[in-house]
Length: 410
Ligand code: ZN
Ligand code: ZN
Picture 1: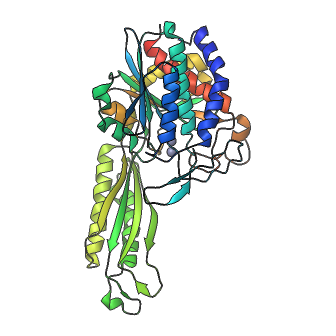
Picture 2: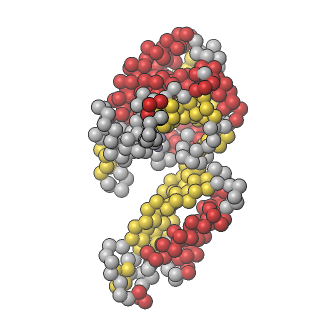
Picture 3: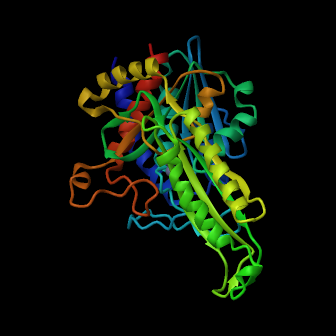
């Protein structure tokens, strides 16, 4: 199957406006779960298409496009920006600022490319509403906030998403990344890692730096914990399984001659399998507790920061998606790739109702950028932004339409 001529023309016709929309969204990103203006802009565009946007989970926006008998499919786009100071030099660079939950003021950037996702989602709605003759069924468009903090899909689901709107037979979604503009990349089965982040407060006893006998030193204790955590992957996990344990922050103390009362570190765990995940989490907790005991310290406080669910591409639905997009984009432009260690909460929408997910990546860079001496900037870099915006958006839109119309197309 490839897209019919009218749909192909509609994509070409909507592209200039898509680029303008993209630049607008790029200029004004908002932090996770604070996407108030973004949600308003999305809802306004959907209303202009004659749709009735509904709010879920605060800043989530959902539009249901009903078009007669037929299957129900869902397509998800995430909408949040990141606390990054943009350094792309683009004329439409962000100068936005935001306030993190801990009160810190920060520059904000669409450093993960969710501005391309919003734009593709809106123009998918535009083409589908303008060409109702080409399809029959129902398309549920999900504009999800808070992907970066794994809060958004959860919030929309807890707000009764699938109790309110038609439940789909499949959930589709995609993400821009530093691949070739014009190409898409997809994994069958496990597509991305599960991710768990923990904050550990190591409790000790404060004393003068000259009197260690009166102290329980949380810095030394924390250092032992962090060192021993390196053995979880190397000594506790089978060589056949994959896991990553990274301690990304370690803070404690204010002065060289004060042994502080507490120290704090945060860690992130990536796994691809539920059993491995459970094992790693158990071993991490065991080591932290046991090291504290070995030092005679009070029990450390372990808080869950966030937890990204599995992102599992249903093999049958993925095979159907691959053959449909190969027909549309050409097989040289569709790459089947291994799972990546990044994480996503899109899988929650499908897993909540037990339907297949197909989630893929689309490239954002020209050959010149990819084949240069330096590798191009990746997602979450202050330099990350597609350098061939029209091709990037066009490919995202063609892939999304191909996926959706492979189910509801006439
Ligand atoms: Zn992202
Ligand atoms: Zn991201």
